[in-house]
Image (cartoon, rainbow, N blue to C red):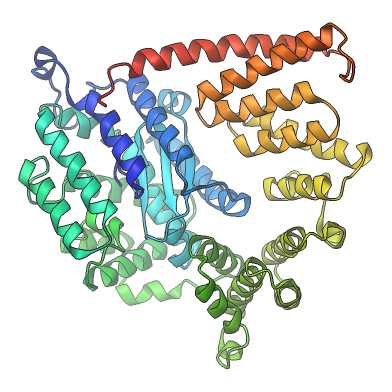
Length: 524
């Protein structure tokens, strides 16, 4: 959707980073490619730009790694990637060299955004309002197509003649608009942006209309190729069209950067050959209702709102709701009660949810995960044991098992399978920072401090925080020397682990040196 996150700090960093691309030398700027060329920015440069913006996203307070929601969006993302590969939209070179990561942000806005280098951001507010996987796949397919079509590189190439003054005005305007929730602040921000003529009168902070139409077309093909119902695109466009009629109070950044022209709406309706009313044919399924409820609670956790969700499970309209709606209501109520630390009520609501979900395997799994979460939050891990599978292969279950093992002080017999499962996970996906952090905790519980420090370092590498990773690798090397000297109180040195640490420390030092070279001219 846009290079810009909804968070002010991330937005500013992204714009400053983009400045280096937008301000080439005069000789270089005279050789800009055409709209469809995209050759000016290399794949490597785009990935580098994405990593630099990605670091800011990971540092943002709004960033969240929720295993349940992350698993849900990642499953959709992988199907879309496979479809794009099949259709030829995703080239082997692009697949190999881009990051292809989905980043969740704890923001209420209905928003998703594409970033350079294969990163995609999704706000919890979007997950909270979509009525099906198909609707979410519509938005994600659109954003994925911005990346596979290299719209970001093409956009930056086109804007390469912007002057430093225009860029500075855009930055100041964006800061003014994002820092103020009031009307005057928003007006001021818009005036500053428009006054610079950086993006004229058309809110050109996003992609061009031609790029949006292309992302509509390609994204629709990708999502249907992946097996998602075209009705999902119909219902998603209906929701966005309805939302665009509301007063613009800052709640719909997706609409502002993705203008829903009548031409685009008609084009999409023609593609799936359905009238707008036919979109209602997609039913709400139970597990999606529960995932949306989780996103709502995590995105908006004020006490008054939590209380409303708890009370909704006892409202007179509850019995009139569909089974899927009831599951969503009960999930939000149980999770809200837990966050209010009213654990007896949370248990009772979770028990109702388990009963309601018993006929649906996917929903029953989510109900079990929530039940265990409630017991862990309550500090009663023994009561969570019935929901724990120490040999689980799925990420939410593995994370929960690790938390349970630490909370209940499990011995080697229980810790072993959990550790092995997480080690297998990071071997498949070394960028899973959450898994590395849990491994560090478990290694400490097993009295393996050297592995614990290395796991902390690897978590920092996964978050693109190379200075912190270097510090932890140095700490691991210092500890390895003490172990080699036989310092009392330390376990024997694992020479194989020490060798890995030395090798990884050199790799991180090289990455950090390159990063510092890349960023030494970054505007301050």
